[in-house]
Image 1: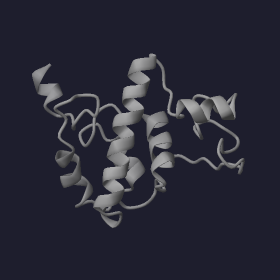
Image 2 (image 1 turned 135 degrees about the vertical axis):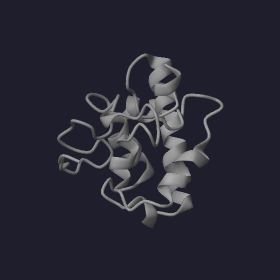
Image 3 (image 1 turned 120 degrees about the vertical axis):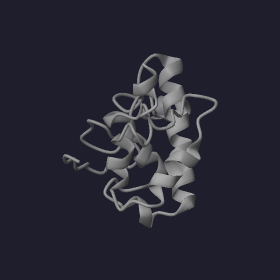
Length: 132
């Protein structure tokens, strides 16, 4: 267990998570932000649904190279990682939509903004999806 856990990146659900560990990787890689968030050695716990929703909430295109985004974008993404994962843990399911907005948007957007949706919950624009 210890050997495997030692290979994981910081877990945003933990109070002692150190975002600087992720920043060290983020600030030096040309990998796409979407790929980086899926790399469990960079950040633990973010899967495909959370990745899509976190980047939507942060306003970051998943193919944007991490190195080109800067510290402000990193901080925004980290904050959404913490918030989305905590909400998912508290609800026992993946919920990334802010509760007030979810009540206003209604089904199917009360739980997720964009993942597996035909259109955006906020603006109604059609969504494109692709394999990262």
